[in-house]
Length: 161
Image (cartoon, rainbow, N blue to C red; front, top):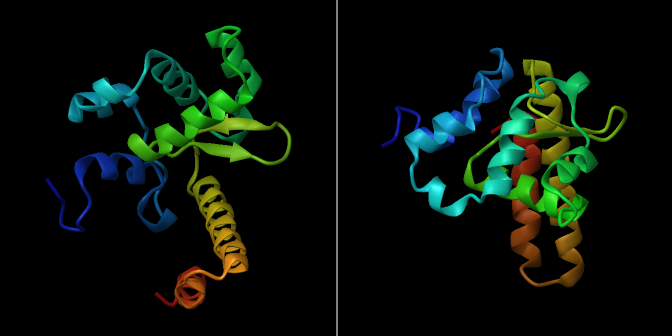
């Protein structure tokens, strides 16, 4: 089911945390609520992924970020930084969980507490996306398409789209 803006309920849960166009305070994210709304997630998310999601939910705001090593340690010796990063990617993709990460101390993962934090995460990820598009041009395939997409994304970043 879609809302009047075309978002599915599950997508709206994730996007809702960011606030509408970053003007509103973030709304709380709950993996358990999302699994009630989307029972099919129970079949694709593992126990470890749910543990990580629930722990990150407790870390609201950049000042309360949890280190990746702490998350890995919670799950035992078979877990490492790479495994946790893979889980974060799956939670962002499958559950639309808006997990932020810090690039400076206190280093770690968190859910944004303010519209400003959400905006900073968005801008950094958007910039990384543009950088990856530029890197893809090194390989030549679809070079014109990539250049066109880059122009459209740059316009969006500048607020023209």
